[in-house]
Each structure stands twice: as C-alpha cells, then as structure tokens.
Length: 270
Picture 1: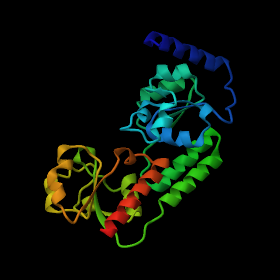
Picture 2: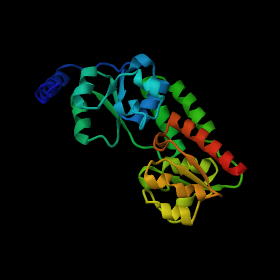
Picture 3: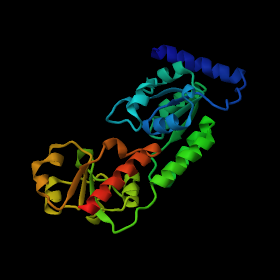
Picture 4: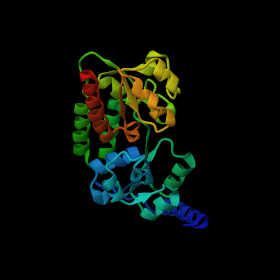
C-alpha cells in the first residue's frame, strides 16, 4: 500500500470513528504480534486462528524465541502500518520501543494497541504472560504457562559457581537483566559483576585468559570468543549458549533454565 493510500485510509478511519460507535471487543480477538518476545507467548496461549501474523524476526533462526517450524507456519509481517492495516486485527501487540509515530498510526486507524517492554525478572515475565493471555481471551492458559515458568525458574541449591556469559559482540549482561536473574536462579554467580562490569561492558579475550571463570558461556561468534587459546583453560568449563535464549521471557525462560541447569550440573561434576 502506497503512502498516499495509507493517508487516505487514516482520514477515512478518522471520519468513521466519529460516525460509528466502537464495536464491542471480541472474547477471542484476532492478533498481530510485532516482536519475537510476544510472538512466543501468543503462540503458546492463543488459538492459532486468532494469530493473523507474528514478527518476521521469529522466522529467523538467529532471533526467534519460539520453535522455528511453528514460526514459519504462521504469517509474518515487517511491522509497517500498511501491512498491519491490511490484516484488520482486533489487537496489535507491540514493543515499548516501537516508534511513537507508528503506534499513533495504528491507533488513528482504530486498532487497539498494547505495548510490552523487556522483562527484567522472572516475575515480570510471568505478569506479561498473564496479561497477554487475558488479552487473547485465554487467562487460564496464561496461568498454566506462568506456573511452568515458575517451576523451571526455581532456585537451584548448592554452592554457587562463577560463570561468565560472553554475549554477541563480546559484551556481558549487567544486573537488572532477565538473563542475570536466570543465571542466579540456576546456581551461578556473575563473573563480570564480581569485576565491576556493568551492562554491555566489553569482556576481552585477554581478561578471560588472565582470570578464567569456572564456567564460560559463549553466545557470540567473534573470533576471540572461539580462539584456540581458550582450550588451554583446563579448569574452565566452556560451553555454547544460544543467543536467542538471552533476551525474551515467556516460554523462552523454560528453555534457558533447562540449558543453564544442565551446564551447572556439568560444571559441578567436572
């Protein structure tokens, strides 16, 4: 749809809004989800027929937070106002980082838009799951998913093991991030926090070699993150960690905690 057509649609929507009373919301609204974190939750709690589209990020193996085959079986959108308008959803789930002009365009077209930020704790993610499930008309499914998340994220006992999480770009997570919360729940202490490194601080290969952590979780693909010298760290457990487990809550927490628990068990046994 060209920009002129979109402008005309916006004008018509404004006229219609003043002349026609709003329809009562449906119990199970049709949905367009515009970011991979809400995509995964919607796919878990909504009926398939409700999902008109998910974000294109979920069909990319590098960024998806849900089963790739499931994501590719659903329609995907780039998130432009034109694409979303053509689908006529009852509800749009957007990121709190979506451009204000885009959100305003959706609303001028009469679309209901709900925004979601990035959960920084398991509890925040559980609240988002329940909210999304309620919006889709399936609160019981949200409660069930939240309970599975809480069970997966139950604190692991025993002596903590120091772990460094080496993210894409060679950076580390800081306090107040979901992945840091998950690391703590899985029985790890933060190598980077112990060294005063905050969110997004760069961890060099030289630092790792000079002061090896007990566990090194490598989520990046930079040359230094896979340097042969790392194999000489005989007392460090080095393991890959999928980048798409780093940022989203919802069902991603279950997969991330399964991985972290396995890695902790491996490190404790070595």
